[in-house]
Image (cartoon, rainbow, N blue to C red; front, top):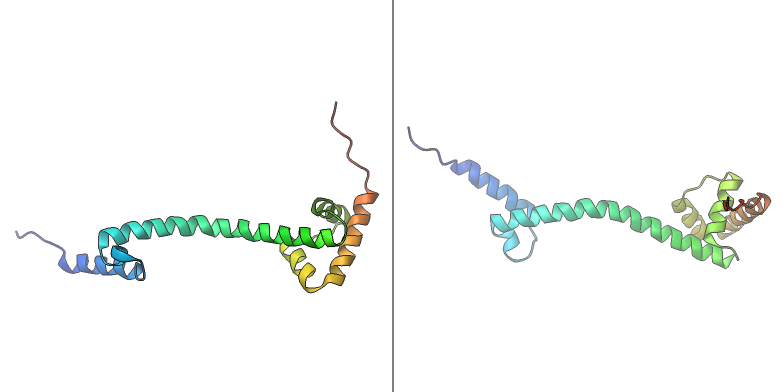
Length: 128
């Protein structure tokens, strides 16, 4: 029985890998071995950075809210605490959008949050 050397299947597999590696620099888009390694590494970075992107956006929103709070004479932590006590449920993305697009509305939210944080008694220190 003759030996089978999967010619067409191997060529198709190589083509499939090199098609995915189009646009890569140097031998990474020409040679199958290098392309496979580059694709694996690219996949790892893509997986990691999909999570990192969420972190980065949250940081950006917090920076924007902090700047908007400083302009109104309060701190970010007091503002967020006041929102919780006032029962205002807005996420950081929405708060940063409101701060940019509708400053008057954000002023009202800050006033309600500061009033609610002042109305609640300070937490007793746990020195027991």
